[in-house]
Length: 434
Ligand code: AMP
Image (tube, rainbow, N blue to C red; front, side, top):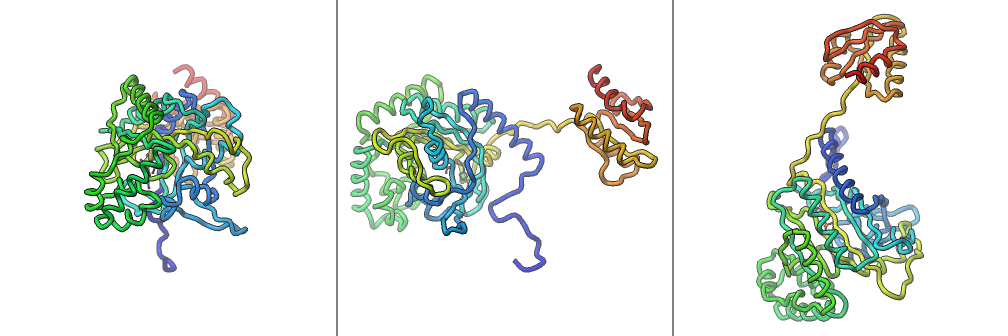
């Protein structure tokens, strides 16, 4: 950037101005009501985490870790990352705060900003916001179903249009490992038709081949073995129960055996909500089960310290969660109109000496008494001040003239002259009697 050039917000980031802030606040209110009503507690984790947390948690072979993290070094040579997602930090916090000792599952929700070095376009930003919900410590299929039902309810309440839910199971353990070998053999047998990227990932992350939009790869994947046909009995039963409970809740879904998600940690249930009202970036929210993620990231505290937590041996900590993008919800939804805050009293500066001090005192008294109040701050004429009060929709205007004040009723039209120190009382009384 040359000297003197106007400085703008960095590519892929944006300012949230008043009207949008209001819509976002109302969205946050809906999420809070729904999730806290279901026993989810709010959590805030730091924007900065040890880079290692995501490398271990999200997976070294994922796009997020390979290409999209904003990283920096602290003074001690440690690598820190601006968080690209919320699940790994929550698993870290679960271990760091000994939450395995609490009643399980521990249910947590967040509304936070995340950072990914992506090619910015409509619906895809470098700083974006997500509401997320995570339930740790139980593998009961009812936790999966409840989690999915809550996201469906949230998107419904926020008016997200033309929503579809796709669902699958990625299995776990040995059957998943056996399937992986089967898929790798299929990919190797057709290596010449695959995209370079998919070919490069056969060893590390063969499942991602299902996500490719490369023509040749898609043809190869159309005949690839499907994980859903290779689940072991426990995983198949788990998936069947999740589906049964979604049917009970009357949440429609389609089973999509090609559904894989961009993060390595998923096991068993995975799901994604899309909206046909969105363009190319049609994902509104998604998630899945991540049994074993907690164990994977143990040893990575926020500052990189070794962590104490659940025993390293023994059963792994199950978990499931989702995240939904606020900007996508706003693009695909019908945001609730937000009423502007009312102004009970506008304090105007009348004629006379020391008016600013007397006005400032009235402003303070009004706010202490619980009124919403604003004061003239830009040296306008009295006419200009009344115009501003009108534009703000102020219910009353106090024109302070020293020891006396003219109190104007902006709706009723009347006015009266009062001792300045009784003005706030008069407004309170009038509002009470309305
Ligand atoms: P993910 O964490 O990748 O599973 O994404 C979950 C949701 O977050 C997506 O369905 C989107 O709604 C949203 N999201 C992910 N990445 C971005 C981005 N770069 N810009 C805006 N929203 C995003």
